[in-house]
Length: 171
Image (cartoon, rainbow, N blue to C red; front, side, top):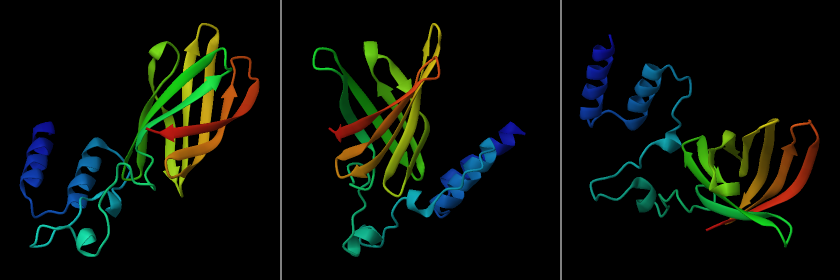
């Protein structure tokens, strides 16, 4: 059964006439995913000149660094002047799926959880395991050019919640 799926996938991938969306929908169905592929995730359609339809119409096909796209490396500091911790976040937006990693104390890399990007708002959480339990930080902010401004809500091991301003700059 698995070999049949692989041969079907190879046949589809080798047939350049099939649209990208159909191929990705098929791939999602193989893995049992329920997420559909939005049209925005499809590569640009090119005409006989080799230019994309968007470029011929005067638009842009750029995604990374786009002001409406949170993809990139973001940095900010937490703590006091005497004890600052530099944070680094890498975000990747693929279609409607936001993923990323965060680096903080002791240069530990951690995957972000519950990430979303909708209507210019970035949201994600980070769970850190400690000896006595978990600390969860939920970030939520509005993308404005190369800045995300919002709040970070920290739930400590004992359940106490604190909220602080959060502002990250894109590098």
